[in-house]
Amino acid sequence: MERKAQIKRKTNETDIMMKINIDGSGKGIIDTGIGFFDHMLTLFTRHGLLDMDVVAKGDLEVDFHHTVEDVGIVLGQVLKEALGDKKSIKRYGSSFLPMDEALALVVVDFGGRPYLVFDAKMPAEKVGEMDTELVEEFFRAVAFNAGINLHIKVFYGNNTHHIIEAIFKAFARAVDEATRIDSRIDGVMSTKGTI
Image (cartoon, rainbow, N blue to C red; front, side):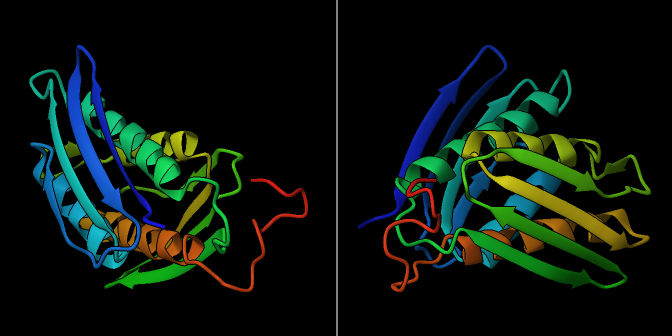
């Protein structure tokens, strides 16, 4: 069974096309018009060992909020669609990840109950041209559109670039773990019989 999805989402603020292959090898084409955000999405693709293409055109002349949030919405939607009935996936994933002086933990549950806990202080207001407060907005959009319980905690760090990079890489590895097929799991990983 191929675990792939493609979604096109167009609003008055953004026009986004995204496709994903959960069982990829870490390749992708990322173009959102926001350099630092492209860098983070490229890291997510590589460290999550999935293939993802993203082309987003947004009202960047206003600010980056609509583009970052809407890419998060679409990423959540393609993850949910690609996983289908979630048969035999591990469901849970976690990753501690260091990036120089920063240490992040990301824990994810693909159990269908959306929630976000985001415990990360950003020393700088911007990295490149991107407002660092948008990182939380991005992950909230992903969590609620994918139907995942997502906990993000940064234990320490001084460099905002390193902090955000640690979060994205840890998220990638947690998603990779949670979406892996385990042949021992009959149906879905739940006593309810559905997730």
